[in-house]
Image (tube, rainbow, N blue to C red; front, side, top):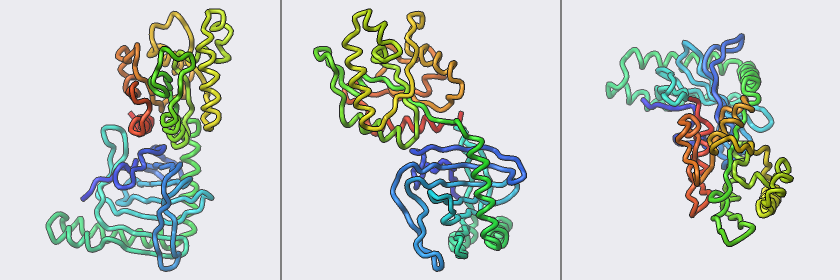
Length: 344
Protein backbone atom coordinates (compact mmCIF):
# COMPACT_ATOMS: atom_id res chain seq x y z
CA UNK A 1 0.00 0.00 0.00
CA UNK A 2 1.16 3.51 -0.78
CA UNK A 3 1.31 6.52 1.49
CA UNK A 4 -0.15 9.69 -0.04
CA UNK A 5 0.17 13.16 1.48
CA UNK A 6 -2.57 15.72 0.90
CA UNK A 7 0.01 18.37 0.00
CA UNK A 8 0.49 16.24 -3.14
CA UNK A 9 4.29 16.36 -3.10
CA UNK A 10 4.60 13.23 -5.21
CA UNK A 11 3.43 12.73 -8.78
CA UNK A 12 1.50 16.05 -8.95
CA UNK A 13 4.12 18.27 -7.22
CA UNK A 14 1.42 20.61 -5.95
CA UNK A 15 3.48 21.55 -2.89
CA UNK A 16 4.74 24.47 -5.02
CA UNK A 17 1.27 26.06 -4.69
CA UNK A 18 -0.61 27.22 -1.58
CA UNK A 19 -1.83 24.36 0.61
CA UNK A 20 -4.28 24.55 3.49
CA UNK A 21 -5.67 21.90 5.80
CA UNK A 22 -7.93 21.88 8.81
CA UNK A 23 -9.89 19.51 11.01
CA UNK A 24 -13.57 20.32 10.54
CA UNK A 25 -16.38 19.31 12.86
CA UNK A 26 -19.80 20.71 11.97
CA UNK A 27 -23.12 19.77 10.43
CA UNK A 28 -21.38 19.07 7.10
CA UNK A 29 -18.42 16.93 8.00
CA UNK A 30 -16.34 15.58 10.84
CA UNK A 31 -12.85 14.91 9.60
CA UNK A 32 -9.88 16.33 7.72
CA UNK A 33 -10.29 18.83 4.90
CA UNK A 34 -7.53 20.14 2.64
CA UNK A 35 -7.28 22.62 -0.24
CA UNK A 36 -4.66 22.68 -2.98
CA UNK A 37 -4.86 26.09 -4.68
CA UNK A 38 -3.63 25.65 -8.25
CA UNK A 39 -2.59 29.21 -8.98
CA UNK A 40 -0.71 28.07 -12.10
CA UNK A 41 0.37 24.92 -13.87
CA UNK A 42 -0.31 22.88 -16.97
CA UNK A 43 -3.81 21.74 -17.89
CA UNK A 44 -4.48 18.02 -17.58
CA UNK A 45 -7.61 16.19 -18.68
CA UNK A 46 -9.17 12.80 -18.16
CA UNK A 47 -11.48 11.05 -20.62
CA UNK A 48 -14.88 9.72 -19.59
CA UNK A 49 -17.62 8.00 -21.56
CA UNK A 50 -20.39 10.44 -20.67
CA UNK A 51 -18.55 13.61 -19.69
CA UNK A 52 -15.97 13.37 -22.46
CA UNK A 53 -12.70 15.27 -21.93
CA UNK A 54 -12.68 16.68 -18.39
CA UNK A 55 -10.16 19.13 -16.96
CA UNK A 56 -8.82 18.02 -13.60
CA UNK A 57 -5.70 20.18 -13.26
CA UNK A 58 -4.78 23.68 -14.37
CA UNK A 59 -4.53 27.34 -13.48
CA UNK A 60 -7.10 28.67 -10.98
CA UNK A 61 -8.53 25.25 -10.13
CA UNK A 62 -8.99 24.12 -6.53
CA UNK A 63 -8.57 20.58 -5.27
CA UNK A 64 -10.70 19.86 -2.23
CA UNK A 65 -9.85 16.69 -0.30
CA UNK A 66 -12.12 15.31 2.41
CA UNK A 67 -11.25 12.41 4.73
CA UNK A 68 -14.25 11.75 6.99
CA UNK A 69 -13.66 10.21 10.38
CA UNK A 70 -14.49 6.51 10.63
CA UNK A 71 -14.72 6.09 6.86
CA UNK A 72 -12.24 4.26 4.67
CA UNK A 73 -12.16 6.87 1.92
CA UNK A 74 -10.43 10.03 0.76
CA UNK A 75 -12.64 12.17 -1.47
CA UNK A 76 -10.97 14.55 -3.94
CA UNK A 77 -13.24 17.03 -5.72
CA UNK A 78 -11.71 19.01 -8.59
CA UNK A 79 -13.21 22.50 -8.73
CA UNK A 80 -13.00 24.50 -11.95
CA UNK A 81 -12.42 28.28 -11.77
CA UNK A 82 -16.19 28.84 -11.96
CA UNK A 83 -16.67 26.63 -8.88
CA UNK A 84 -18.21 23.70 -10.71
CA UNK A 85 -16.86 20.24 -9.92
CA UNK A 86 -15.37 18.62 -13.02
CA UNK A 87 -14.81 15.19 -11.45
CA UNK A 88 -14.22 13.25 -8.24
CA UNK A 89 -11.49 10.78 -7.45
CA UNK A 90 -12.19 8.73 -4.33
CA UNK A 91 -9.43 6.57 -2.88
CA UNK A 92 -10.35 3.59 -0.73
CA UNK A 93 -7.93 3.87 2.19
CA UNK A 94 -6.61 1.78 5.04
CA UNK A 95 -6.04 4.67 7.45
CA UNK A 96 -5.24 8.37 7.73
CA UNK A 97 -2.77 10.20 9.95
CA UNK A 98 -0.60 13.28 10.37
CA UNK A 99 3.09 13.37 9.40
CA UNK A 100 5.83 14.91 11.53
CA UNK A 101 5.63 18.12 9.49
CA UNK A 102 1.89 18.39 10.19
CA UNK A 103 0.66 17.28 6.76
CA UNK A 104 -2.24 14.83 6.67
CA UNK A 105 -1.66 11.56 4.80
CA UNK A 106 -3.57 8.41 4.01
CA UNK A 107 -2.58 4.84 3.18
CA UNK A 108 -4.08 4.00 -0.20
CA UNK A 109 -5.70 0.58 -0.50
CA UNK A 110 -5.53 0.42 -4.31
CA UNK A 111 -9.23 0.50 -5.20
CA UNK A 112 -10.53 3.86 -6.49
CA UNK A 113 -13.83 5.29 -7.72
CA UNK A 114 -14.11 8.11 -10.26
CA UNK A 115 -17.30 10.12 -10.70
CA UNK A 116 -18.45 12.99 -12.92
CA UNK A 117 -21.48 15.29 -12.68
CA UNK A 118 -22.63 13.80 -15.99
CA UNK A 119 -23.08 10.40 -14.35
CA UNK A 120 -19.88 8.52 -15.05
CA UNK A 121 -19.06 5.91 -12.38
CA UNK A 122 -15.72 4.18 -12.88
CA UNK A 123 -14.20 1.53 -10.59
CA UNK A 124 -10.43 1.71 -10.99
CA UNK A 125 -7.45 -0.43 -10.05
CA UNK A 126 -9.40 -3.54 -9.08
CA UNK A 127 -6.54 -5.52 -10.63
CA UNK A 128 -4.06 -3.89 -8.22
CA UNK A 129 -6.33 -4.72 -5.28
CA UNK A 130 -6.62 -8.36 -6.42
CA UNK A 131 -2.85 -8.61 -6.92
CA UNK A 132 -2.19 -7.26 -3.42
CA UNK A 133 -4.58 -9.83 -1.98
CA UNK A 134 -3.14 -12.71 -4.02
CA UNK A 135 0.40 -11.79 -2.92
CA UNK A 136 -0.59 -11.80 0.74
CA UNK A 137 -0.07 -8.05 1.19
CA UNK A 138 -3.75 -7.66 2.11
CA UNK A 139 -5.63 -9.95 4.45
CA UNK A 140 -9.04 -11.34 3.57
CA UNK A 141 -10.59 -8.78 5.91
CA UNK A 142 -8.72 -5.87 4.27
CA UNK A 143 -9.64 -7.10 0.80
CA UNK A 144 -13.33 -7.55 1.53
CA UNK A 145 -13.45 -4.23 3.40
CA UNK A 146 -12.04 -2.45 0.34
CA UNK A 147 -14.68 -3.99 -1.92
CA UNK A 148 -17.46 -3.06 0.50
CA UNK A 149 -16.15 0.50 0.77
CA UNK A 150 -16.07 0.80 -3.02
CA UNK A 151 -19.71 -0.30 -3.20
CA UNK A 152 -20.66 2.19 -0.47
CA UNK A 153 -18.92 5.04 -2.31
CA UNK A 154 -20.81 4.28 -5.50
CA UNK A 155 -24.13 4.15 -3.64
CA UNK A 156 -23.64 7.09 -1.28
CA UNK A 157 -21.75 9.55 -3.51
CA UNK A 158 -22.68 8.38 -6.98
CA UNK A 159 -26.34 7.76 -6.18
CA UNK A 160 -27.19 11.48 -5.96
CA UNK A 161 -24.37 13.32 -7.69
CA UNK A 162 -26.03 16.73 -7.33
CA UNK A 163 -26.23 16.31 -3.57
CA UNK A 164 -22.58 15.22 -3.53
CA UNK A 165 -21.53 18.31 -5.49
CA UNK A 166 -23.53 20.62 -3.24
CA UNK A 167 -22.03 19.05 -0.12
CA UNK A 168 -18.50 19.49 -1.47
CA UNK A 169 -19.25 23.10 -2.41
CA UNK A 170 -20.55 23.86 1.09
CA UNK A 171 -17.49 22.23 2.68
CA UNK A 172 -15.22 24.30 0.41
CA UNK A 173 -17.01 27.51 1.38
CA UNK A 174 -16.70 26.65 5.08
CA UNK A 175 -13.01 25.83 4.65
CA UNK A 176 -12.35 29.13 2.88
CA UNK A 177 -14.03 30.98 5.73
CA UNK A 178 -11.64 29.25 8.13
CA UNK A 179 -8.52 30.20 6.17
CA UNK A 180 -9.57 33.75 5.33
CA UNK A 181 -6.65 36.07 6.07
CA UNK A 182 -4.13 33.22 6.15
CA UNK A 183 -1.86 34.82 3.54
CA UNK A 184 1.71 33.99 2.59
CA UNK A 185 4.43 36.61 3.15
CA UNK A 186 7.88 36.96 1.56
CA UNK A 187 10.49 38.88 3.57
CA UNK A 188 12.81 40.09 0.82
CA UNK A 189 16.43 41.20 0.91
CA UNK A 190 17.73 42.90 -2.27
CA UNK A 191 21.55 42.90 -2.50
CA UNK A 192 22.63 39.35 -3.29
CA UNK A 193 19.02 38.32 -3.99
CA UNK A 194 17.84 40.55 -6.83
CA UNK A 195 21.30 41.86 -7.76
CA UNK A 196 24.97 40.98 -7.50
CA UNK A 197 26.16 43.91 -5.44
CA UNK A 198 28.69 46.19 -7.13
CA UNK A 199 30.23 48.79 -4.77
CA UNK A 200 31.36 50.88 -7.75
CA UNK A 201 27.83 51.34 -9.10
CA UNK A 202 25.62 53.92 -7.34
CA UNK A 203 22.37 52.41 -8.66
CA UNK A 204 22.56 48.64 -8.56
CA UNK A 205 21.51 46.61 -11.58
CA UNK A 206 18.63 44.28 -10.84
CA UNK A 207 18.93 40.90 -12.54
CA UNK A 208 16.07 40.04 -14.95
CA UNK A 209 16.20 36.33 -14.05
CA UNK A 210 15.93 37.06 -10.33
CA UNK A 211 13.02 39.43 -10.95
CA UNK A 212 11.26 36.80 -13.06
CA UNK A 213 11.74 34.21 -10.34
CA UNK A 214 10.38 36.57 -7.68
CA UNK A 215 7.41 37.42 -9.89
CA UNK A 216 6.63 33.73 -10.37
CA UNK A 217 6.90 32.98 -6.66
CA UNK A 218 4.74 35.93 -5.61
CA UNK A 219 2.08 35.12 -8.21
CA UNK A 220 2.08 31.38 -7.52
CA UNK A 221 1.69 31.82 -3.77
CA UNK A 222 -0.34 35.07 -3.79
CA UNK A 223 2.21 36.30 -1.26
CA UNK A 224 2.70 39.77 0.20
CA UNK A 225 6.23 41.15 -0.25
CA UNK A 226 7.89 42.92 2.69
CA UNK A 227 11.29 44.53 2.13
CA UNK A 228 13.94 43.84 4.79
CA UNK A 229 16.90 45.27 2.84
CA UNK A 230 18.61 48.52 3.79
CA UNK A 231 17.08 49.79 0.56
CA UNK A 232 13.91 50.33 2.58
CA UNK A 233 15.54 53.46 4.01
CA UNK A 234 14.71 55.08 0.66
CA UNK A 235 11.00 54.35 1.00
CA UNK A 236 8.46 57.09 1.58
CA UNK A 237 8.29 56.06 5.22
CA UNK A 238 11.95 56.95 5.85
CA UNK A 239 12.89 59.09 2.83
CA UNK A 240 13.18 62.36 4.72
CA UNK A 241 15.36 60.81 7.41
CA UNK A 242 17.51 59.05 4.81
CA UNK A 243 18.03 62.27 2.86
CA UNK A 244 19.07 64.12 6.02
CA UNK A 245 21.68 61.43 6.67
CA UNK A 246 23.02 61.63 3.13
CA UNK A 247 21.60 58.29 1.95
CA UNK A 248 20.68 59.61 -1.49
CA UNK A 249 22.05 56.52 -3.27
CA UNK A 250 19.67 54.36 -1.26
CA UNK A 251 16.78 56.61 -2.26
CA UNK A 252 17.73 56.22 -5.93
CA UNK A 253 17.97 52.45 -5.57
CA UNK A 254 14.60 52.30 -3.83
CA UNK A 255 12.93 54.31 -6.58
CA UNK A 256 14.42 52.01 -9.23
CA UNK A 257 13.35 48.91 -7.28
CA UNK A 258 9.79 50.11 -6.94
CA UNK A 259 9.61 51.01 -10.64
CA UNK A 260 10.91 47.60 -11.74
CA UNK A 261 8.65 45.65 -9.38
CA UNK A 262 5.58 47.69 -10.31
CA UNK A 263 6.27 47.05 -13.99
CA UNK A 264 6.29 43.30 -13.25
CA UNK A 265 3.12 43.47 -11.16
CA UNK A 266 4.91 42.83 -7.85
CA UNK A 267 3.47 44.96 -5.07
CA UNK A 268 5.53 45.96 -2.05
CA UNK A 269 3.14 45.59 0.87
CA UNK A 270 5.46 46.82 3.60
CA UNK A 271 8.95 47.31 5.01
CA UNK A 272 10.47 46.26 8.31
CA UNK A 273 11.08 48.88 10.98
CA UNK A 274 14.16 51.13 10.86
CA UNK A 275 15.07 51.20 14.52
CA UNK A 276 18.66 51.68 15.70
CA UNK A 277 17.84 49.84 18.94
CA UNK A 278 17.25 46.57 17.07
CA UNK A 279 20.53 44.70 16.68
CA UNK A 280 19.99 42.71 13.49
CA UNK A 281 17.61 41.70 10.72
CA UNK A 282 16.27 38.84 12.84
CA UNK A 283 15.08 41.36 15.40
CA UNK A 284 13.51 43.53 12.70
CA UNK A 285 11.53 40.63 11.30
CA UNK A 286 10.55 39.50 14.80
CA UNK A 287 9.21 43.00 15.54
CA UNK A 288 7.27 43.02 12.25
CA UNK A 289 5.71 39.66 13.09
CA UNK A 290 4.73 40.91 16.54
CA UNK A 291 3.03 43.91 14.95
CA UNK A 292 1.31 41.70 12.35
CA UNK A 293 0.16 38.66 14.36
CA UNK A 294 -1.86 37.33 11.44
CA UNK A 295 1.32 36.35 9.58
CA UNK A 296 1.94 32.66 10.17
CA UNK A 297 3.21 31.48 6.79
CA UNK A 298 6.30 33.28 5.63
CA UNK A 299 9.68 32.80 4.01
CA UNK A 300 12.82 34.94 4.22
CA UNK A 301 14.92 35.39 1.06
CA UNK A 302 18.35 36.61 2.16
CA UNK A 303 22.02 36.17 1.29
CA UNK A 304 22.68 36.48 5.06
CA UNK A 305 25.34 39.18 4.77
CA UNK A 306 25.58 40.45 8.34
CA UNK A 307 22.99 38.15 9.91
CA UNK A 308 22.66 34.39 9.64
CA UNK A 309 19.51 34.31 11.85
CA UNK A 310 21.10 32.01 14.42
CA UNK A 311 19.81 34.21 17.25
CA UNK A 312 16.24 32.94 16.75
CA UNK A 313 15.92 29.33 15.65
CA UNK A 314 12.17 29.61 15.04
CA UNK A 315 12.64 32.46 12.57
CA UNK A 316 15.63 30.70 11.00
CA UNK A 317 13.32 27.81 10.03
CA UNK A 318 11.79 30.21 7.51
CA UNK A 319 15.10 31.22 5.92
CA UNK A 320 16.03 30.51 2.31
CA UNK A 321 19.72 31.22 1.89
CA UNK A 322 20.33 32.83 -1.52
CA UNK A 323 23.79 32.61 -3.08
CA UNK A 324 24.93 36.25 -3.42
CA UNK A 325 26.96 35.38 -6.53
CA UNK A 326 23.93 33.96 -8.35
CA UNK A 327 20.91 35.80 -7.03
CA UNK A 328 17.43 34.34 -6.64
CA UNK A 329 17.16 30.97 -8.40
CA UNK A 330 14.14 28.81 -9.16
CA UNK A 331 15.27 26.27 -6.57
CA UNK A 332 15.19 29.05 -3.95
CA UNK A 333 11.60 29.84 -4.91
CA UNK A 334 10.64 26.18 -4.57
CA UNK A 335 12.20 26.09 -1.10
CA UNK A 336 10.36 29.29 -0.16
CA UNK A 337 7.01 27.86 -1.19
CA UNK A 338 7.65 24.66 0.76
CA UNK A 339 8.53 26.74 3.83
CA UNK A 340 5.39 28.87 3.52
CA UNK A 341 3.37 25.66 3.36
CA UNK A 342 4.87 24.41 6.64
CA UNK A 343 2.24 23.56 9.23
CA UNK A 344 4.44 23.09 12.33
